[in-house]
Length: 272
Image 1 (cartoon, rainbow, N blue to C red):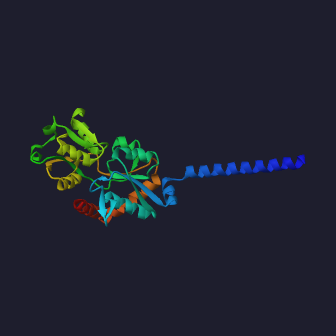
Image 2 (image 1 turned 180 degrees about the vertical axis):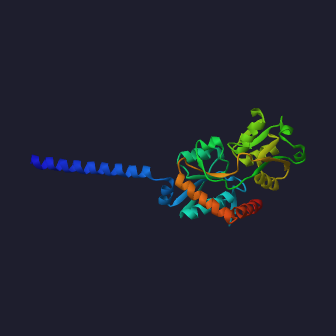
Image 3 (image 1 turned 45 degrees about the vertical axis):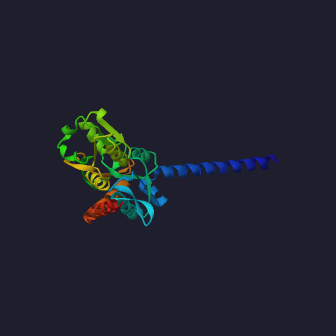
């Protein structure tokens, strides 16, 4: 009786050890998987964006339904297609995108993001896919008064929080004169309501907002993007995924498709 009990206990212990060993092996396998492996196994590419920045990304009514559109989204779809997976978009405030990337809430960030040295400390980036300039939006009738940063020295400047324009503003204006908000639409409202005197924003985004809103206009003063344009943010160490993304970008550039994506996005944004 005792011998049978001992054998039974030994058998149970052996099964438990085997189960623990198998769990350990599974864990090690997961840790060794690259981001590219994980995306392909999940069957979807989860992209973070801030859909208030036409023509890059914005909400549009298509066939009576609200959808997130823009040339960033077209590029994201091309990346997903090349990886053989479905595309899933997560919309959030711009300044929370890299936090979401680091926290594994998204696989990539498509948001007209400039790969500054500060951002490179927390994320890897693709090759540059689009280079833009920036302009100030002012109330109509005031746009001709701005020829340089000095013309706005004592004015209240609105910028999107966490954006490259916020960095440009900090380099050229006193911190007390800068107002950072999460959404471009809120900045436009503040300009109309005299809560800011000017908004610094990417050229194409400025044009669309001025076309859609009466009482505001772009200045002729152009600010060059000295930091290098827009790129896709990836989690640190995603070397294989970065290579695949760059392959897609290079293919789209060679086929002149990004230019078409930008043109189509501008047209759609103007209709909204």
